[in-house]
Length: 151
Image (tube, rainbow, N blue to C red; front, side, top):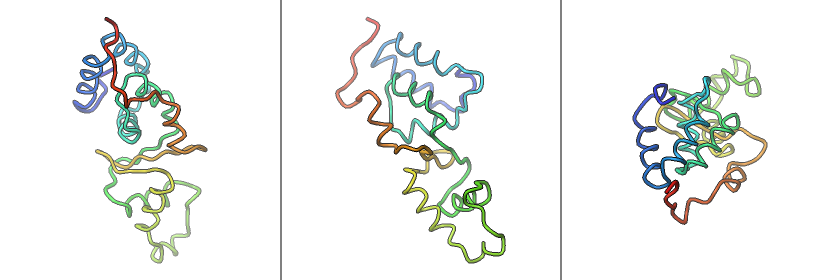
């Protein structure tokens, strides 16, 4: 499944998991990610937004990838605002009104409301009925250091 990844980020991430958690946990995570339709760009962005590093938490983000949204190739709040108005039915407006609309302000507001952030390759946000904090509370704690697994 790594051959579909776009950069060395995943290789480094997996090497870190092998060092800290063991080969068994790394393999278990990779099996959960090995789906034919995995959107690696979106997964990479979601993992970065959630700021998770453990195998179990990366697998959990992948399992809930539908609760994240990724807008590739945007660089600023104005780009986000334009993308949303042009592509999301909820935010569609009459083209005559666009010259009066503050796309940058809307993108900034949207980022705050949806826990969004710019990542390498675009903009990612949490698109769910619950908050990103609620989702993160369900994950395993990564604060206390990880033990060597599989030994």
